[in-house]
Image 1: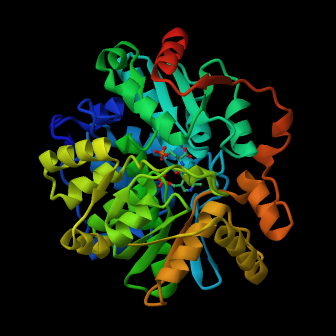
Image 2 (image 1 turned 120 degrees about the vertical axis):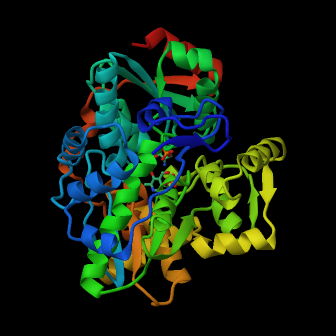
Amino acid sequence: MQYISTRGQIQEISFKEAVMMGLADDGGLLLPASIPSLSAGDIAALSKMTYPELALRIISLFAEGIPADDLKDLVDRSYSTFSHKEVTPVVHQDGIYILELFHGPTLAFKDVALQFLGNLFEYLLKERGEKMNILGATSGDTGSAAIYGVRGKENINIFILHPHQKVSPIQELQMTTVTDPNVFNLAIRGTFDDGQRIVKEVFGDLDFKSEFSLGAVNSINWARVLAQVVYYFYAFGRVQRDTGCKEAYFSVPTGNFGDIFAGFIAKRMGLPIRRLILATNENDILSRFVGKGDYSIADVVETPAPSMDIQLASNFERYLYYLMDQDTAKVRKAMADFSSTGGLSFDANLQQRVAQDFLSGSATRSETIDTIRDFYQKTGYILDPHTAIGVKVGKEQTGGECPLICLATAHPAKFGDAVQEAINTSPTMPDSLAGIEKRPSRCEIIDAETDAVRNFVEQHSC
Ligand SMILES: Cc1ncc(COP(=O)(O)O)c(C=O)c1O
Ligand SMILES: N[C@@H](CCOP(=O)(O)O)C(=O)O
């Protein structure tokens, strides 16, 4: 399995090289040159596996070059840190299936990939005798998951940019109270989009990238998307076992388009996903794209689902590559047009193709809060605000043709204020958060400027 860039100037690199490269050196994103397809029989066999067995089977299809025993060890260690024996259990509530992705160390779906990526980086660096400086941007969840994935690991320093005062109080504490010497939190005066732009600009300076051995933990890194493909198979297997269904809908709260893109890969591999339902908050550029072919940037607004307060969805470029029939010249042109005009529009023909894969919708602030309240009143189950958006849009877009699986991307305790507003009760705090506000913390506040970040990394690199 070789990897290529969406912009066509990186050809045929290995899985290991793709993981280490993170952002493609031509500014694009890396993808496998071909996607393996699984038969219905293969998929039925997968449904009998435990989560680590399934993860090993799916990841090994894409991870040539890592011996099977080593990969098994990496996968087993990565999922042993989850508090639920099923890793990502599926629960049935109010007629829908909720795929709980928040049983990892930092209580969000990011742990599923970042526990694995942290171990994979450690393994590859040892093999190469190298060091790495990880640089990432977060709207709240990737940051802590990445930090927990690499804290205290040798030969790795990690620098995480988060938008100052725009993440939830618990999200901020989960990052800033990790005071291991290899962890650096930078609160930037700006938005997540500013942080992601800075990260891409620093990676785009290839001399700097090479001199400081930069590594990527955002879904820029293909290994992130790959590890997230696994739970689509897992959830479908569990729901099919219970219902005998032939197809399912997946509703995915979406910001940077990474999680739903993992579902798109699962669909291309043959998983019978009837449609992926793309659910956004008021930052609805992606739902406008699916619904109207309008991909035009607007200002970021603050919502009760801050992790999705994103306009510039990094993985959109990966989807464009498939929508444009893997024509990298067209992708390059589209990305250049988008950066000069701030918008792209898609004709009826392309919109029809998008509609084969996706449905979409969005939720306002009050609809998000109302969904948490209504769901709690009916079931006693507390949704976090991101999950609530997926549930609301998923229910609106489907009519019982086949099961609806909604991705529960975070634990409600991370977003106590929104939950309190909705149901007048605070969610129970998981043990891992006990006393978090009393722990010592460390964070630098800086302007959202590429040079400021570059200088900081230079001074604190390993
Ligand atoms: C809790 C939560 N839900 C949903 C999302 C959206 O995921 P993605 O960015 O992969 O679209 C994010 C982060 O972006 C998140 O942290
Ligand atoms: N919601 C994310 C945004 C970054 O997304 P990523 O999947 O590309 O890392 C976050 O919590 O930081």
